[in-house]
Amino acid sequence: MNEILKLSMPISWLDGIDPRTGVIIQPNHPEKGESIAGKILILPHSTGSTVGAYTFFKLVKVGKQPKKIILERPDSVTISAELAGIPVEVTMVREVHKLEVDAPEKFLRFLEKEASISGSKGFIKVNSVHISGVSYSTIGDAGLEFLEEVSREGLLVKVKSTTNPTGMDLRRWKEMGIQESYAEKQFRIVRALLSIGVEPTFTCIPYLVGNRPKKGEHVCWGESSAVAFVNSVLGAKTNREGGVKTIVAAVVGFTPKYGMHLKENRRPNLLVKLEVPLQGRTDFGVLAYYVGSLAPKSVPRYEGISKASEAELKSMGAAGAASGSIELFHIDGITPEASLLCKEGCETLRIGVNELKETKEWLSNSGSVPDIVAIGCPHLSRDELVKAAELLDGRKVRIPFWLFTSREILEKNKSLCRRIEKSGAKVLCDTCMVVCPLKDLGYNVVATDSAKAARYLHTFQGLEVVFEGFESLVSLYATRS
Ligand code: F3S
Image (tube, rainbow, N blue to C red; front, side, top):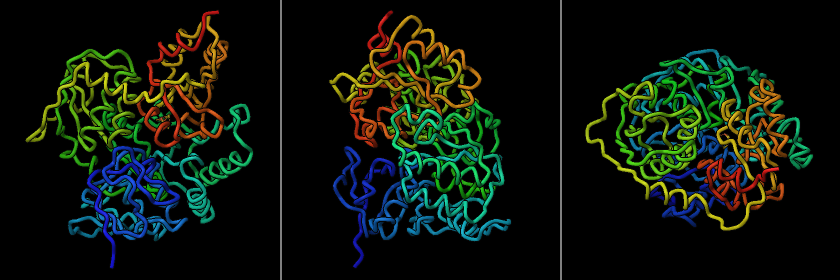
């Protein structure tokens, strides 16, 4: 007799399941404490990080995977379970499409299965792929083995393929305190990826370092924050792809045409009326975090935001995809598809000072003094580094103070980074506070200004979090010299 477990709420595969036991650990999840191991698992869809797709490999490795997954709404991250050998179905019967291109048979069959499960309208060629699931901390031995197998098979990517952050600064890992054994596994992941022809960007802001899709272009991207940015700010089209799927799409060059690739799904279905002005990127993140937690699968259209910088928009994309699975948002007068009409029955959500305050309080779950400040989720742009340098000029940090950016941005702005480091802060690249093993490095309480980082530092890494705006963190933890 097959045991069935039906989830009444979506699950975040990265931090909602214990990959060693198969037990649901997602805070406030109605089925928290239940095990999915060996069961027929029925769920609405997933939320959160695209790297969560590697959780299926981890579960299979210890025999704690569900027997089968039945999705009520197709989502690419959960469909990736098929690649780990877990059958996935949807509750409706779908048409079968054939993909006839020169690519490994198992990858073609997977994409055909995804097309069938998702009710896809055939396949589309993609112009670029962004690969998530690069850090040893997130993909573990199971992910490493998968990538080395792909590498051994001699497969090569067919399209421009950039890569998400690793688990450490690839040059300064010893300075971070990373163990040799961890570094050895991380370098194996990097070598496996490079052998298939990816670009070693190792950043979650590939759109600022040469992989910037144009409006209307079809791409296939992992990294949920970048997915939201590409769809919302650039007007290009991608679904929120699971990390494993991005490898498949890079090698095949095609993806099923459904979800965000179709115009009808890009129309807003939630109207958000903002009744309070936002102050900087942290507030933008808090707003989107609130909306994502209330309407995880929505396409919100925001009213009441008069201007927004790219830094604020990337913070917004990251947060809405961390608390929910928001792939696309529109802002009246700002984003390129904001003129799309709301769908019929579109609900209205009003947000004022109380909602933002409650969300900030929820994200800050520690009353303790932090032992490290970590800034740069998503990775910092050049403009944000300039702002950081201005704030840190003439100050000395009192505790470790790490800022994360991409290698390319650092290389092009060396004197700016040296200026920041005069304060004692470190500008690190190739990694971030969430996907490096911060807890194993001996830190327990982290201060950050990012809603996405606050969420995962707590639920994925098990750390206490102090959540504050960047200016406050500088004045609290960097003394005037
Ligand atoms: Fe980027 Fe790491 Fe945040 S990958 S979006 S800095 S969790």
